[in-house]
Length: 517
Image (cartoon, rainbow, N blue to C red; front, side):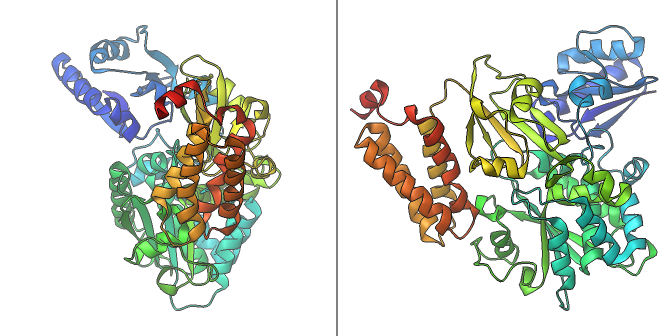
């Protein structure tokens, strides 16, 4: 019997993982070879997907990227232990994987995401078991001491948020998982939900025990059908095993989870817009205060955290706060799953402790551009993140280090651009994106973004360039300090950074003038 592991991750499926799976089954039947195929998540080496592994005495040996045409020869290599051009060796020893510090993603790509038993066999639910013995105060002490900050972008200390909800008196409280991942170049939430859904479910359950909530919601965008299925199947399996529902594992705690699917509005990634959508209304930003921790879903105290924030909790409760806090730098503790995308040679998910520099991530880990041309700019933190030029590649990946340079870590997505990029066009895209995605509630975001597009068009056409650049800068400050939420407030970051570091791209060019004519 040969045990073969093939990803069911959406990224792998997009490049033929399902077809490769069917081809393995057919080839094994034709050769009368007995095999067992386990569909896992992805390990995050996307340039090697579909990456197929099989259980060997020395460990799980990987091949990739495997196509349907490769299946017969790969199967022969598995059965005969022969050399093969696609053979990558033992998966855990692949340098790109080996140099990572996988705390949150330790099981992703390893376990069967539908199996509670497989999850438990890889230290799953040990954190919850310990949490049941600690109680609220003990859990809060661990989460606070770990230094965990929200991984959704804001970076707010998780322990403080949970304590606020725990200390707020109410007849009912809620846990909400923000899985409305919509930033360009980000896919960590999707990966963990598809490859290790129980870690998210376990983290939410621990949060419920901590603050006294009995109900949780996972809000997932409709563009993530594979993740929706994985989380729903995980919830059912957790209920069957007694990890959700009444009297969790024989304790006095009750907690259950429900999936809600959003329509894909970017603004619903903002916590108060998400709450509005969950309550059945249009996703529009709420003014704060009151904070969701005091008055959130259905007017009740609510913990809202990102997928990766909840996914970090089981490690902290199982291995201890200090084990987590030992990684990182300054006030940025633990690890960050960094997503490398755009024009990059080795794109994928790279989990590492805070402190690695931007240059190391782009040049060393990512291997530079896919095109082979020089890197001109990188955008960190999604479509509203700042653009950093090469001279800023010494910036450590750390919340405060980025803030000092007017940048954002956001959700940890990095998009790379080579020297063919037009940065004024990228600045225009940011304003246009905001105009399209704005909920329309506040004037700086609703009107400012539309005026921003018009002003950049004037600059690109050569219409009073200096005066319009001054207008654009003033407009950016108005949006930054006057918008109700981060959508309008962060849109100036890519615009202002493009102006600051790539000023030469703002103004007329022969090609633009010809197009205007």
